[in-house]
Image (tube, rainbow, N blue to C red):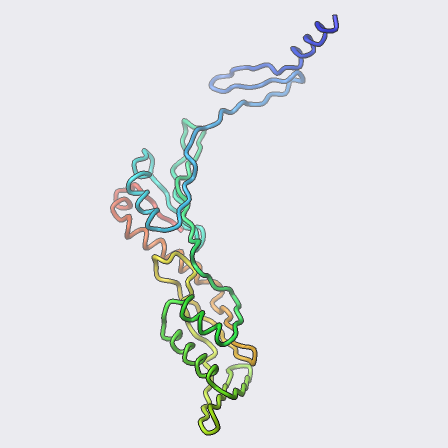
Length: 243
């Protein structure tokens, strides 16, 4: 009797499977219903680390898809490629690729470095500009000076460097310079940023002064690069590129 009672309890507590149209529901003993949604087979998102790889895969693989492709640049380090929602797969939207710029040195909103460290950074973490050359010369003069005197009036900083006992130079530092740190995909031109520089006895400080607008410029540059590389696909309405 106990065995039969247990079997009866198990049967009455098991959900009832009910087919309604194209959907399947599990109905519990309390009358609650939950739709049983099948798992959709789809390829994993392929991680990429360059725009070149993204372009080649879009041309040779993803462009064979029946629906148009969409490429977006959500930030200065990321590009995503995906398709339209698929009605026969419960409107699942397939994400094909995600390219990440993982090998760029980057540069913070405010960076303080010693003079020699800043010299190294100017040569290794920036694309060359006129102001990069100016900053290198300034840092070199300060490093070579046996005696350095600073005068900061809140608007500009004056640095006096003395070499030996006779040679002395006095130069007012430009407070604003334009630099191009490596901060996005290295296949494109790096975005310019305006930096406020300050010098003291501990080193030099670079403070970003463009309100982060360089991030939008970086995304626009990546978009222009992809539009050029995928011009045929874009013209044929097979690929749409947006920020």
